[in-house]
Length: 575
Image (cartoon, rainbow, N blue to C red; front, side, top):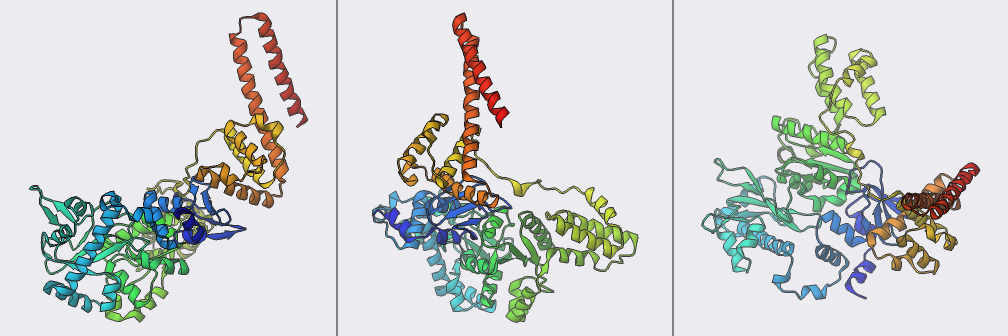
């Protein structure tokens, strides 16, 4: 048994995929919303029996290696490494490779690990680092918390980190590619993070992908926070601070609390709310939300209460609502952020705020009616101008109707008038974004052939006399299946295999629900294939008639063509 087979034997596909997406039981299989495209209806199926997965929305599929490759955006070797670690399998033939043979991702990952150790050392063993540590203690940190989150300190130096890494065999090129330094015009390497408290960014598997640095005792015109630039490991549109620690709690609660800063996330975890992540120094993106959608459908915003924060929150909320999240908001009262609430008022005050989360539409209503006399016409116009765009963004018709009626009752105006005003509003967003799927462009014939093959796996019948109707690809598969060969050995393409096997399960489920017999569906497939075959034959004969110069041959061809038409007419008449 080779390493790949051993990993597959030790790992269950349901357990592996459950670390990334929320699976629900569907008969003998599992179903989930696909993380690779936006959808409302779950179209990704997982077969525990076959240890494969397939999405019927975007046509992606395969085994555990393909899934990890796709969702992590990595190559096969890195997926192999991740799964080998999970399975406790040693990949001997890869471990013997020299440093020069390692992938670029691996080299950069090693550089980041060493940099993190350097930053941690500086926090604990340098004069300025100890001072930064004292500041962190005042902000609610303790020794255990600093170790748990690998907090460090970058000294006020242009070269200390670079020299430390170069002494350990890492060249300037990889230090720069890791986002830890940049080359000056004279070719010298300059450290990116200087005089900053360092918070490492970890990916979903707990591996360091980058850093956030908060300025310490050297503010001036420097940015308060500095993030790693884009690298092969770090992409700010995907990175969520704390996701490695929060993912299981988020799934368990079916809820994620989203904060803005690293310290906010750490303090929230310390207080006991473990389902918290931070966007940390960047706007919330569609990719962030896609990652969170794997774990929860409920999203709670606890962003800064200042005006800039409020605008950023509104944009983020709109995006989350577009993507189908149930959105709520936390009222931080007079405090700026969650860390301040916990530090000044204690974790009990934070718990109380979390328990009183407000649904986003209730928040918008309260805000719109605040300090306004709803009996005055001018105030009614202001209230509707504020609320109607938010109501229009609701995708569920029943929910939308509920809030129209609520507004109608509170303002004492007719529903129809509110609807009329709402219909005048044009939202600045792409329509039907949630319904976007990416189907493979395949011919009508192949769609029918594929469906027949899926049905054949449910109900094997004699097909020898119909093989001429199929293309070579499907004909070969059917012949081998009739000879009792296993489909896993016939189809080498893992994605195509998952598509067919899970397609069979999907078809079976639909047929049972609609009380349709498998045999009837197979007959329909064969009938449609025969029609396509005859149409193709007619076109070929028609072309021959057009090009034939011999009158006798032309007459034979015309007779053959007419016979085909009569056959088709007779069948249509019978049906």
